Image (tube, rainbow, N blue to C red; front, side, top):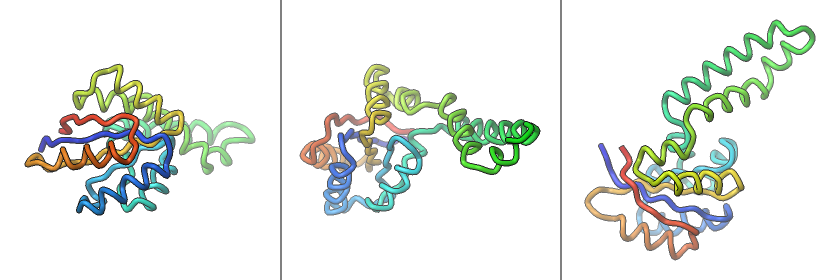
Length: 168
C-alpha cells in the first residue's frame, strides 16, 4: 500500500543514531525506520545500534537483489575453474562482494528513489552522499498523518536534507 516515506541525510552516523533516538521517543518503532549506509555491513551495524532495519529494501530493488545473487553464483562458478585461485575466491568474501556489485549495477539507490518520486538530481545527490559516508534514514509513515512530526524531528536532529516521497 502506498505510504509516505520521509528521507533524511545525516553527515555522520552519530547524528543519525541521535535522530533515531528522537524518533523512538516519539513512538516510531524500529520496523518503520530504514538505514542506508555505504555498505550492507555498515547498515546492519547501524540498524542494530538504532533499533531500526537495514535499508536493503530502499537500496536494492527485488530484481537487482536477484540479479546480484545470480551474478555472485555465476562468478563463483567461473572462479572455481580458474587454476590456483578458484576455490579461494569462490568460498571467500570476494564472491559475495562481486555479487553485491552486480546487484547494485542493476538497481541503485538513486533509481529506487527516483521511482518513488524524488527528482533525479536529488536522488543522485543522496546516493553520492551515502557513497561518501553519510547515512540516509527512511521513515515509513502512516498516511493518516505523522509526516509533519517526523519531518520536524529529523530536521531538528541536523539532517542536511529532509524530503518526503510516496513509497509503493
